[in-house]
Amino acid sequence: MKSSELTIGQLGRRFGLATHVLRHWESVGLLAPARAAGGQRRYGEDDLFRIAVILMSKEVGVGLRDVAEFLASGGDKDVLRRHLAVLQRRIDEAQAAKKLIEHALECPLKLEECPDAREEIATRIPPP
Image (cartoon, rainbow, N blue to C red):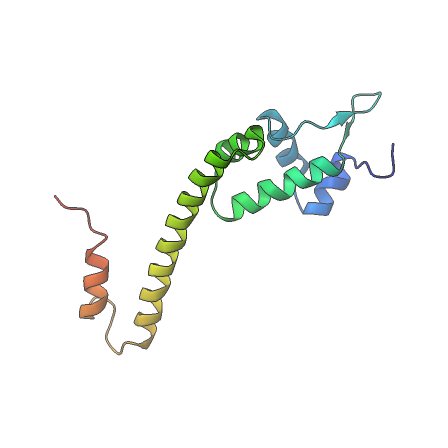
């Protein structure tokens, strides 16, 4: 084994991932590790990069199917633009939720009694 190659166990420990997660990512095409003579997986620098991209994507709520599309595209700009738009929507939603929580912490009224909170929450109720 080359010194820069890792076994599945070593890789899992490095990233704090269970080996079954790495095998699953391989089964859905996210990873394609090299194989040693006995068929044992060997992970190199490119695999480390891909795993970091997968984890970053998961942290912001991007699904594995979308991550696979991004990785398969080689960083296609149209794919990146679409993912940027989705990420921006999630950021906007998180910021709105944060603003509401901050308001609720400062407001002396209960959330359901506060007219400002009720108005904000009402925007999230779908029409009949």
